Length: 382
Image 1: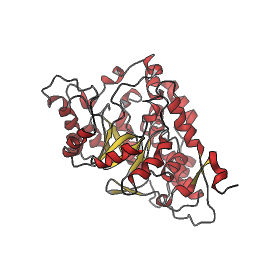
Image 2: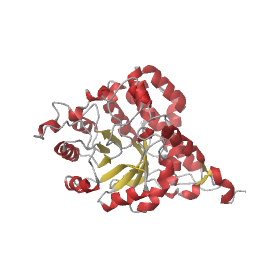
Image 3: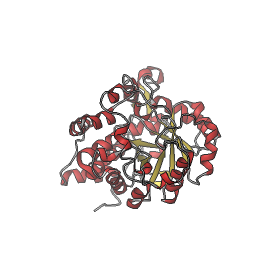
Image 4: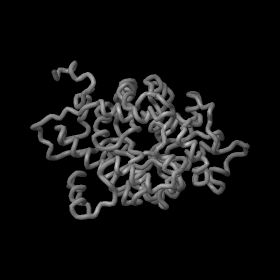
């Protein structure tokens, strides 16, 4: 039974002492065990990055460049990870990123992931390319749900997806705009292709509500390569839900997003899966945060592996942080229990880092909490 007075760290340590763990604590070991259990096509798809993989490596390398500077002798006995977002107070700044086709990794797919998220009070983002429908997932939990939207070549289908998410009780839309053109990923191309997931797209299947709305001959699975800033107004008019533009790495695009009615932005390079050699998401984060100002929510995605990473992203201007591959690996290994343990481990580490760094609230963490390790000598530490 959960003790409401326990911190995430205290609760997780108690669980570890009394229960057998289902997944490894170490990320590299977690990834290794998960990938070994998967068919080569599924393993390739989840682990793949664009081109030579340089962007994926940069995401991690640039995280490592930032160093936390702990402060001591501060009262951290009563810590809070709570943040205000989506017109509610969340238990923590952690969100589960949208990942499609999750039944390729465990038979319960997104249903297992959202149940684990619900146990921990963590919002779950459902992908357009999910194995279970918008409605099926909402029946499991409609209290902390986001819907990640790809704009298809059929505008009526896109609007129908928006309307279904709103009717089902989702809290917001993540409009993903860094996927208009197919990516070039040699590792993925050598083993599989996107048709691996086309057969399990519940939101766009032949019997889906989305497929009955259009009288065009457009393929509802096709991307809209013509999507532009001028098209956003039609989407904002189609829903009362807040829309966050996902896939932002340039400050000017962040400013344009706000100008065109977006309620927030998600700094992301799609986990390094889209453009080889592009800027690391964590490098772009502070510049995007500065561009939109404190009144516009900035979410962060790409490269987060643990609680210390989440802390760094918050310090650099993120209001909340998405966790992606780690929870999918947990799903692969142990279903709902695996997702629960991976996410709880990240929350426990974040709670530990917040306290050990001298903060009693995640809301007080700012750029003074970290330094650029490559230029530490110029910041008063020499």
